[in-house]
Length: 279
Image (cartoon, rainbow, N blue to C red; front, side, top):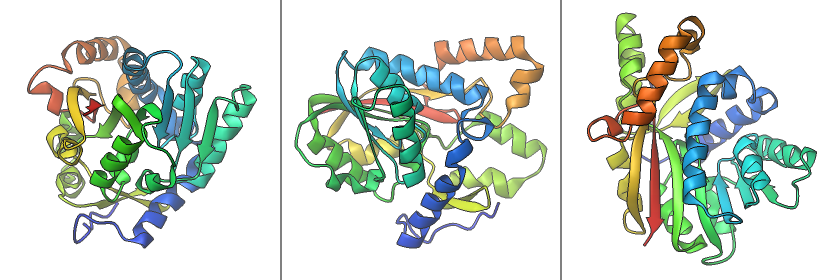
């Protein structure tokens, strides 16, 4: 992977198309090891726990970056109405097919629409909440625009719940420092967008601390909770830890759930989870 940085915080149209093409290319098998291995499933279940405690039954929700629809269909199965969007048209089609397979097409509407295109969703104050899982918001060109459109679309006191790829991951620091891969170690600390290779394509990604991520949202949203994910437990690309040391992994995962929201620790981790309420 190269560590070529973008010259500023903006993304040009070719870079957005790079990201779109990368996810289109993996949509067919993204439910497997690439996009939903055992460690990602654990992170997903932690997100579900927070979605269930945040959204009342029968809520009308937006899924920002739905991927293959695992979250959207699960929420629909619980009785929510979900508008699921993804910049990758192939991912959106996978979501709609999954909903149809589970006879939930009436509760899931999947659209090939990026989170940076929310102006194309009509209405004002028509959704009870929105969520984004496992990093789609790391790829949006202008988080402030996403915040403004979410505020327009959500009802008063509507919630926005997201998991975002973080800047400071202790496991990653140790992993790449031990291998002396200093260029790879520096990627998360870039201030602009950086290219991340996947399946012969490029995903343009920007990494955040919780404070950095919340800054463009604070005009429209009040922060009610945030916590680190994979602070003690290994990040999703270190599946060997779970496979070879299952008992140790379970202890670390329990420690994550217990202590990930503590001050100082909540700013760490492979991802962080954030809950905001519309002002």
